[in-house]
Amino acid sequence: MSGTSERTEGPGRLKVVVADDQAAVREPLAAVLGLAEDIEVVAAAADGGEVLAAVATGPVDVVLMDLRMPVMDGIETTRRLTEEHPEVAVVVLTTFADDESILGALGAGARGYLTKNAGRQDITRAIRAAGAGQSVLDREVQDRLLATARAKAAAPAPSDTAGQPLPDDLTPREREVLALIGQGLSNRGIAEKLFISEATVKTHINNLFAKTHIRDRADAVRRAIAAGLA
Image (cartoon, rainbow, N blue to C red; front, side, top):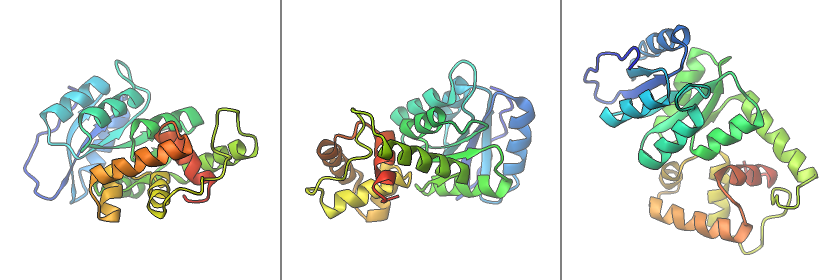
């Protein structure tokens, strides 16, 4: 594994893996983040395989994830982490802010999305938010999502539900859950926000998706934005 740091005990500190295929980015970023009193960089990874290996040896709270990496890219790595280690939050840090990258990462389960224009304070804030089950999106990313949602709402494709009004039979709780998905919260984050169990959140999401014909989480984000809920 590239640049793995010595693991020290740090009660209460967020344990973070920094993933970037460029050592010139990865190593200084890990060093800077390690200066924060509440963050402990436990590993630095050059590709998705190294990320999964670091998480497997754990404990890890947050992965700061580049998207373009060899062996396994950031989106596939995020999807694997979401499926195999749902307790680990992913914050994307990348130079790419196109629709495919943003929606792919969020759909795979990322809780945060920042571009590499973000400063140290922006990155540490996003890591802390992700560790608390919340989400932070770069302003550029938010603007891109809004622009995409508005364009789809104005001229929806036949198979796209983004421009359609929400059905009348949605319960207030289901609308609330959709709004929180639109804000980027994970199931755990929604459960904590609403003081309900994750199993109950999953039930609300299943009912919500069935009633609205939403296909996946990325589609839910678009629908929430188009409906003015996020």
